[in-house]
Amino acid sequence: MTPDWTGELFNPNPRRSSVDLGDGAHCLILDDVFREPERVVDWAQADAEFAVPTYPYPGLVAPVPSHLSAAVSAHFDRRLRDPLGCRRQLEALVRLSITSQPADSLRPIQWLCHRDRIAADPDRTRFAATVLYLFHDAALGGTDFYRSRLTPGETDQLVADSQRMEASAFSARYGLSAGYMAPTNPYFDHIANVPAAWNRLIAYDGGIFHSAAVATTPSLPADPVRGRLTLNAFYTCTRTLRA
Image 1 (tube, rainbow, N blue to C red):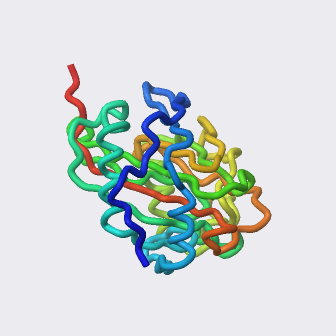
Image 2: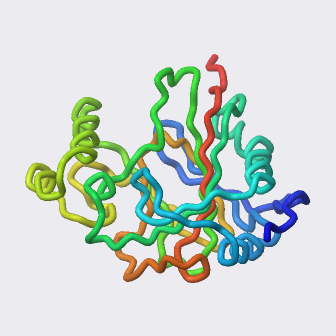
C-alpha cells in the first residue's frame, strides 16, 4: 500500500553544509532532510518492487510512486537547483537503490568510479544528482569523488574498455582486480569523501567522477532495513547562463 506522500515531506530547516570538489564545484549536504524518513524505509520493505537493473548498478533498484517522485523533484527546484548552477529542470528520474552485489562478482565497469552522464553541450546542459541515505549504519559507506589522472582521450578509453572487456583481460591491461572502487587508484585522484548519515541528502554535478564508498564494507545486505538503501534522483537541467 502506497502512503499518502502528498503532504510536506521535507524539513523546512535542514542543516546545510558543503564539501569542496575543486574547479568551483561543491557537494551540497542537507542533514535531517525528511520529516519522517522511516515512512520511506517502511514502504521500501513492504511494497517496493526491487529488481536487478539492466544498467551496471551493483545491486537492486525500485521505482517510486509518482507522488514521492514529484515531491523530490519539487524539493530540488526549491533548495538545490540554483546552488548547483542549474537554471531550469527539464527531467527527473527518482528511484530507490540498494548496493548489495558481492565485490568479487562485479564487472570491470563497476570497479571504477563513474559519471552519470556527460553533456554534449556543457555550456547549456547540466546533469545533477542527489543521494539520500536511508540507513543508520555509517559503515555501509557514503560517497567518494574523484578526478581522472589521465587525458580526456585516455579516460574515455579506460571507461570504454571497462564496458566491453572481460574481467581477466581488463585486469591484465590495467592492473586492477574485482572490487568496489577504493580511494587509492592509479587512474584517479581522490578529491573528497562525504560520510553517510541517516537522513542525509547530498547533491552534486553528476558529470564529476564519483562512486559509493563501500570498498571496505564487510557485507552489503540486500534488505531495505539492514542494507545500504538510498533514494537517488537524476536531473537534466539547463545551465545557469554564464556572464
